Amino acid sequence: MDLSRDLKSVPQGAATHVWCAVSPQLDGKGGVFCADSDITPVLPEVGSTDLTQDRTNRGTGVQAYAVDQKAAEELWRKSEEITNTSVQGVRDATTLR
Image (cartoon, rainbow, N blue to C red; front, side, top):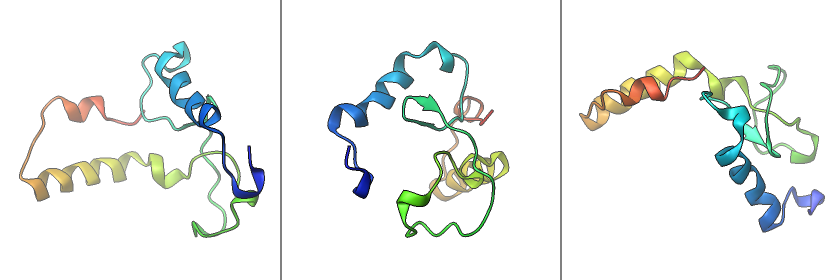
């Protein structure tokens, strides 16, 4: 792992995807964010959400806006409106819990 550039090797990078595919911890769970082969916590809302910040000083977790149920529903509704498409049944499966 190259910590100075926040880079992982290919096996390290793939590990979380494999873990997500087979982990019983994720059975019946949706809308979680995973990193480093685990479910990550929602980070407290402090300071800037500037993604250009020094990545070595950020916490491990997910920003609250990324798992905002209200925002997800609005995005889904807008997407259906813009594409003039409605996918029944999928909406329930994509609900964040």
